[in-house]
Structure formats: C-alpha cells, structure tokens
Length: 155
Length: 155
DNA sequence: CAGAGTGGTTCGTATCCCGTACTATTTAGT
DNA sequence: ACTAAATAGTACGGGATACGAACCACTCTG
Image: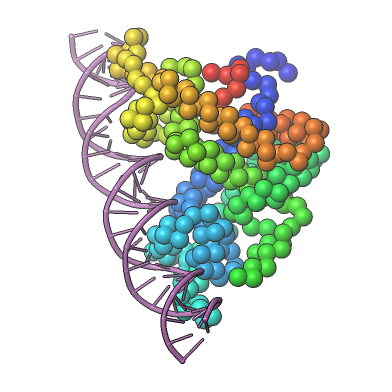
C-alpha cells in the first residue's frame, strides 16, 4: 500500500469512538430521512417495538422529559406512525403502540440501517468483528447506554 | 413499575455500534452542558481549533448548510466563544477563530470528554483497547466519518 | 468586462427539547 | 375513609437547530 494520503493512519481511541459515533448518527439520520422519518421518530418507533408503553417509560428510554414526549408523540401520531390507547390499568396513562404503517416504516428503517452498518464495517475480518462486538457490547452494557436499538432478549 | 428487562449478555455488532454511539453522544451533550455550551457550539469549537476557517469550510466539516452556519456562528459569537475577522485574501469570506474564552472553554470541554470516554472504557484490557482503537480508526477513516474531534496530524 | 460561481445573510418554516404550571388520577399516610 | 403526596400527561412560552429559497457582494473566467 502506498501511503499517499494526507489522512492520519490511525486515530486514538477517543477520536475513534467519537468519530465513529458521529458516523453512526449520520447513518441513522440518513436512513430516517429516506423513509420519511425524523431521527427522533425512528428512534421512538424502535423503542416502542411490539410493546405498548406509556409515555413515561418511552421518555425514560429516550432520555427526554415528559413535556418533550407530548409533542414527539403527537407528531408521530399525526404522521400515522403510532396510535394511543387508554391504559386499562391506570386512568392517567396512555399506551403508545405502532400502527401498521409504523411497523412497516420501522422495519424498513431498521433494514436500511442494518445494511449501512454492515457496509461501514465491511473491511473488518471475522476476528475483528468478533472483538469489536465484544468490546462495544461491554462498553454499552456496563455504562447503561440508551437502549435505542432493539435486541432479541430485551424489552 | 416492575419492569422486567432482561439484560442480554452481549449485543450484536449493529446494536453495539448504535448504542455505544448514543452513549458517546450523551457524553458529548453532558460535557457541553457542564461547560455552558450547546453540543453544536462545542463541536464548532473543536473543528475550528487553532485554524481560522471560513464558514463554508466549517459547514463542510460539520456537515450542515451555510444558512445553518450563520445562526450557529452568530450565537457562538454572542456567547463570546468565537470571533470573526475579514479574510485578507477574499473579500466575501470571514474567518472564524476562537476567542481566549473559546479556547479556554474548548480545552476544558475536551478534557472532560477525555475523562468520560476513558471512564466508559475503563474495563477494557490493553489488548482490547488496542483492537478497538484499530477497528474504530479504520471504520472512521475508511468511511469519511465527520472530523468532529481533533487529532495531531490533521487540520 | 459581462456572466458565472462562490461566500454569507436573511427569512420563513419545522422539529426538538426544556422548565414551569396545571389537570386528572392513583397511591400512601393517618 | 379521607386527605396529602406522588404520578401521567398536557399546555405554554422560549431557545437552539436545521433547511431551502431568495438575495447581495465579491471573485473568477472567458
């Protein structure tokens, strides 16, 4: 390989984490836009998933206040992505769930993100992926990272 | 309130990348707030660094349009973080540079972020850090990740 | 030198988030 | 049971952010 570019060969760990974080955020924003969603709407739908949830619960997962939830949910409802139902067990609470349209958009969004993520790590070997997966899992899980992306086990 | 959230032992690579990305963004937002900055202001100062730059250049690094730059720069100027000077080589252009106050805030912000990043990876072994650094560097550099954090070589 | 291109600003629009105040419902304390 | 405290959600005002289109001023090109 000819070292002819002016870019640094390697970043330090902090820079690598921050820049790859920004790269991921850009992917999420672009994938959202391609499906007619705002980043917050796609994130909201991801945390709702198949579990009807109160606004307080969703706000905790998204780490935004309840007054911010009102508008976010309202706009998502206007967009036909989610619907509300009274909580049978608590007269104060409303349960948020995806509409058919919301499920469709959410699936499409997640598929697109999956592809893009796969693409940016395409040059990593199987061993590197394995190491990266283990390291990032531990970082995310031991630091209570926001659960903004679904897994099989959780939720 | 009995949220039965089973914590998984390990996330897949996509979830690990996305959640650790969100974690990093939270760190950046919190560190910004602790120094009286908005996330965009701290990011702006990081890309300015010690290199007086035009708004177009900064907009390209931040990946926002020039009309968005106007307000961002204006608010940062009002906050005493940056200052503008006419570009001696181009009458249309203004050069943005940090004020003394901006340099101080930027240094403090970066120090705080460094500590927090160090903290979340505290459980990784030296070998794991080395692998993580190499993998994230390659991901960031081969995918033109936004240069939102300074390095020695660049800029 | 005229026309095209570039750097920035302005304006109108929309999203997003926050803190405070308020209503309605539920829960806890006595 | 009944009142007081806690909780779920909304309303409102305000600030930061980002966009596109229209526009001005300056620079570069042919």
